[in-house]
Image (cartoon, helix red, strand yellow):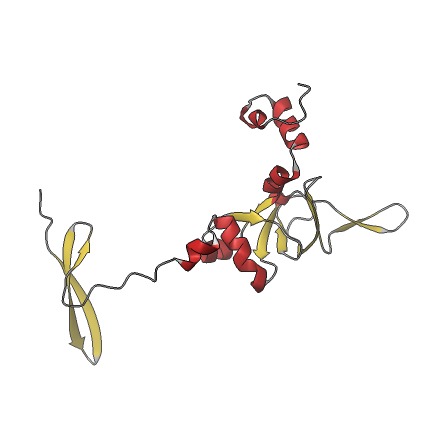
Length: 179
């Protein structure tokens, strides 16, 4: 195994080759290792599970001695695969403070850095280009009220009934027709 890097090592089941893949990977591949999961609210809002960490993102530590700490990411080292979070420091013997390195898999992104840069990051993370979003169609128009709506092979008819100055919508389903 004298080769510096080979993309075939990621398919190997040998731990030594997997470690060598990660250690000798070029920076454009190591950047993929810097992804962190999004919080539940951001997942729901943007429809993606994880995205690459950037300086200025608000993160929460999920593992280790600083579990539960929240802060902004200050420095991200792609080469060494760690992130430094504000307010998470250790004191050295001489009394000075030093950032504690945390692996990106041990944090969760609570807020994305800035509104302006958010759109580009989300497009890149979801795999959409600018041309795809420009061509995106508006939401599908709803069927007119006169036509029945199909629900799982059944035809449903909606009726509005007035009870005590309140409009209540009821739905009746016709039985399925076997083909």
